[in-house]
Length: 391
Image (cartoon, rainbow, N blue to C red; front, side, top):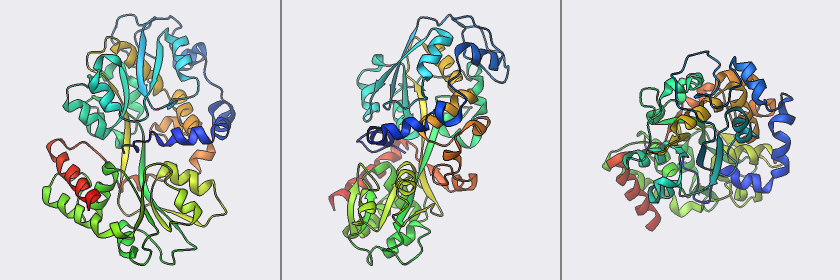
């Protein structure tokens, strides 16, 4: 899902709880330590020559010879610190390649479209990736040079992240759910339809996200349509459905999804999983319940190379390094997120894997439709959102 325009969700959490997140990071959480260059090479069966064309692999797959990459710099437009602890430094030690993070917590697409020459790599979701691809600004990955991407669960190789397409690389994911206060809501909520049906009873105590890319698909799903519908009539129905519930909404939330639920001014909230996990598990004395609806929407974050970059070989080496199970586990432990690399799972902090909100069973994701860019059909979503906001 596209995060709210105020920035990546964990940006605000990191700023408010930096000490707490530091305690969760890889060194303290797993006891494995960040792998040194020599340690990672030994673990992956590589050599220790700087300037090797590709990063380490666990599969032993051969990669084609590329130009030397030592001394190159990758300019990475990323959410602030959305990377594993020490990952940039360790990759530089291993390969001689510097990754310079350009922290852009909103408007990454407009940043790249305004000046494609200003970056080499960018973190996107599928919706944003589709926008850049439509503008001809996404480069093409050679997956033969990223053999560790084969370790990503195929369930997350969706759309532009599919092996057959290779325009972006799936890195992490999330979903939108429902949180309600059991001391204020007597009914059991299991679906988005329940929220609409209960809205008159709990009028003024319901919060939704101020996010077109999430809310329009959820409303379409509530109507029984695909969340990524490109049908004008279905999108018009979604607008009307949203207008129906609008008088009962307390607020459209752009920042802290859980604030109103925690202070009791809201009884039911539309919440992304990162916020639900932090709010529910971090406030055990507040009677909150997280619900995975029968069907919902979610976001798939990806890395995309900017078309025309002259450091593509270095980017592919960095990506291969990132998907090494040890390195990817560090990424998950640093950010307290679920894994899409099954071989990394045993290395992930139990605090994360035992949390059913952060780390749900696989069947939950069978109910999630990842938000995508819809090309010409996108305007129907845009029009539905504008109609709702102006009503």
